[in-house]
Image 1 (cartoon, one colour):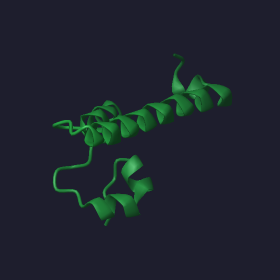
Image 2 (tube, helix red, strand yellow; image 1 turned 30 degrees about the vertical axis):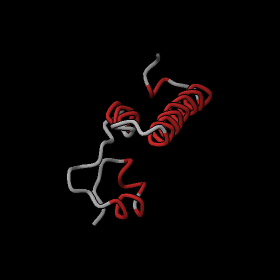
Image 3 (spheres, helix red, strand yellow; image 1 turned 135 degrees about the vertical axis):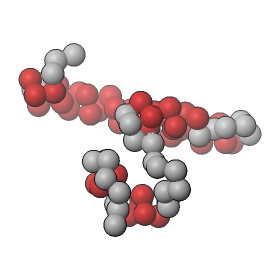
Image 4 (cartoon, helix red, strand yellow; image 1 turned 90 degrees about the vertical axis):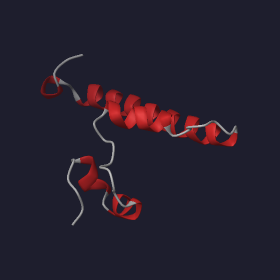
Length: 79
């Protein structure tokens, strides 16, 4: 894969689409796993978030994460 700076808009769109599809698949797998009573259905989401360095810090407050998605995506914590 080319460097991010050397990517065309079409390349970036294709990458973003693939990353979104992976996250959506992980979310759907987590819900399906919960419906089936799997012991740890969130493992699918944890893996995908960890792959992108986006696991929330220990002790993070869910509502704070939801209220500041831009900050979280940049790796910053909400105030």
